[in-house]
Amino acid sequence: MPELPTGKGRRLFFRFGTGKGCAQQTPGLDKKISGSRQWSPAVDSFAREGRVQPDPDAAQPVCRILLADDHKLLMEGVRSLLAPYAHLRVAGMAQNGSEAVSLAASLVPHIIIMDLGMPGMNGVEASRAVLQILPETRILVYTGHEDQRFLPELVELGIMGHVRKSESPGVLLKAIESLRRGEIFLTCPDPGGCLSAMLRARLAARRDGAPDIGVLSPREKEIFRLLADGKSVKSIAQHLYISPKTVESHKYNILTKLKAGSVGELVKIAIRYGLLQI
Image 1 (spheres, rainbow, N blue to C red):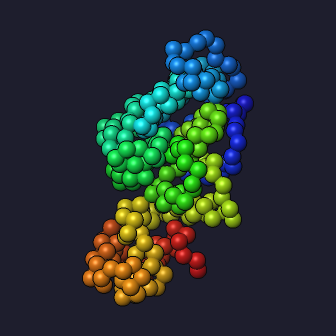
Image 2 (spheres, rainbow, N blue to C red):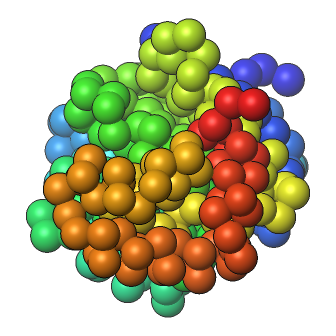
Image 3 (tube, helix red, strand yellow):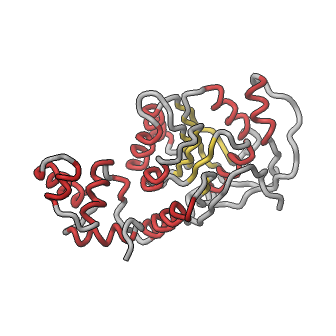
């Protein structure tokens, strides 16, 4: 069976189990699409580069996809790219994070292709909100940002894919198919394998039923790491320039959200997520 078109960038794959309607094999992809489209030249160029014809005899469950990007022209291009695939259906399009969360709640998509730099609620905040209400949704970050510093936070939230907009449309197609099969797909550099190790740990923790640390706020995650690392409430307060009472309040919220009875249990959770070495 021919593979989807490939592009530049390093890809990391990890099996993540199955999702309803999203765990079947990729159809045959060896025929080119003919004919013209009614998009602008820019959109048509985007779609034509990755356009391939799936096997019409390969019936597959429909995988609902939500697009979230503040550039409507780009979303139209992605929709055109996916149009030949009967099993990949664009169920909706959102132009900001708040709209993405609202549409996700009503459409319950299998995959969300999420931009990061949207007005109002950005892609990171929208991903956090979506995964709190729909933890099984698979989020593919599709961004023009080359700065990778946000990736560890996104991985902790539970995203399953990352593709830069500088990649070819064929890479985006391959990423979507990977997420549909329950695999993680990244096109970002991973020096030392740190990110891949974090991904493995997160997937293993989720399979084992560990509490989801994605429910913690950024400040709570920071305090969670410090508590798990053995820091006292007083030292955390000094380190973060906040009062011990504020730290105690965050500590209580962390224990409650993670259903932990003690700091010792927080340590175990941190180890399972690969945040602490033993």
